[in-house]
Image 1: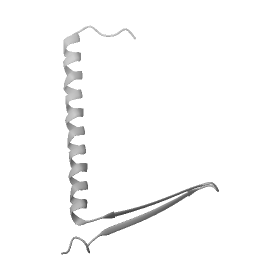
Image 2: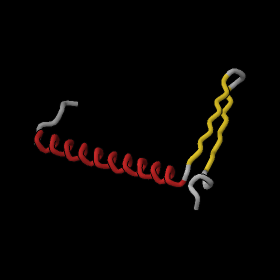
Image 3: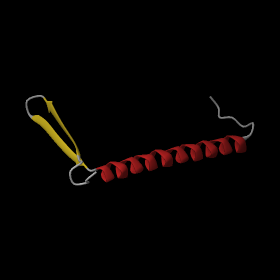
Length: 72
């Protein structure tokens, strides 16, 4: 596998009405795809940690409140 020859490319075009046209093109090598995969994995793992921590914090607040409830 030669990294300079084995590249993945993608192209997208979007047209909105008569005045807006968006064109995008990307070009990745295999190591670049691995790097993007690692970044996405890291983002997903860190967001799950944040959600879990927020759930624990909410449970502690509810427990500390005890029997006191908010008026409806």
